Length: 348
Ligand SMILES: Nc1nc2c(ncn2[C@@H]2O[C@H](COP(=O)(O)OP(=O)(O)OP(=O)(O)O)[C@@H](O)[C@H]2O)c(=O)[nH]1
Ligand SMILES: [Mg+2]
Image (cartoon, rainbow, N blue to C red; front, top):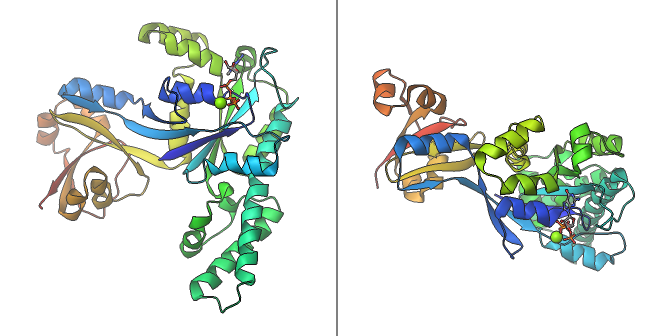
């Protein structure tokens, strides 16, 4: 899973990126997804290794209205192949940090319009290419042309491609174009401490309108507070957070929003060697999920032994879980649920 960070200059993109992936000097980094369930299982099994789920983030330069189109496209090109976008919108006041938009509403509108313009450009260019081909189009190309025209119509009406009804076949034929408005987007509003506490800032209605109209996910954050929280020890951290009326840091909340917006869930494998979280899409069956662990395990899949995390949390012993009959056997087509502790039986 790869997420591109998108926004205007000085909105706090790199700050949030570093909070997620640590102090690195590379624009691509891996964020460890903190999960209390993994902590619990790791304590229980005391394994040699504990592995959390991860998400890859890509940080890019800011896009601003004064840049030439070519440069804007180059910036967006850096996140062409990501699975989702994290928009970082500047909503903090700080005279020391320059600001491109006088209003949060105008800023999000700009970010929204830029994606539409870019996608419309891609749609039109490729429609022209197909229409001007001096030969008969293949069946595949015919399908592609039709799907592209659907996208063009929607984009002309300022509608994101992800909101169009598309068949799986159409989605497949469009996948090579990397439409930004076809990806899921999560909007992070980067507030200052005061507006974060008050939950109010100028331009909030416009933000809400764009978020609702395009079915985007949204999260309020405060980059600066997050930096401070990050420096604290675990117990000080909870005190600091509860003072803000929160139970989790913004980065942890962000991870949850990302999971739910992208329809992701976690399952776990446990043992003396390793306790590990795995990320899959909701609706994945056990055989496919086993393939995450190893392709051989998918190929030789016999069945999965499954325990619910909530049972493990309550009972705390695999032996007792088995004696209570709470270990279930699942076949290859059953669907994995969030929090399943899975042991795959397979032969190679
Ligand atoms: N006051 C305040 N300053 C912040 C906050 N988040 C980031 N900053 C500061 O704003 C400046 C820009 O932050 P960056 O994270 O580098 O912003 P960016 O979006 O990566 O900027 P570009 O890469 O230039 O587009 C830095 O000096 C940060 O310390 C915040 O929540 N509050
Ligand atoms: Mg930056």
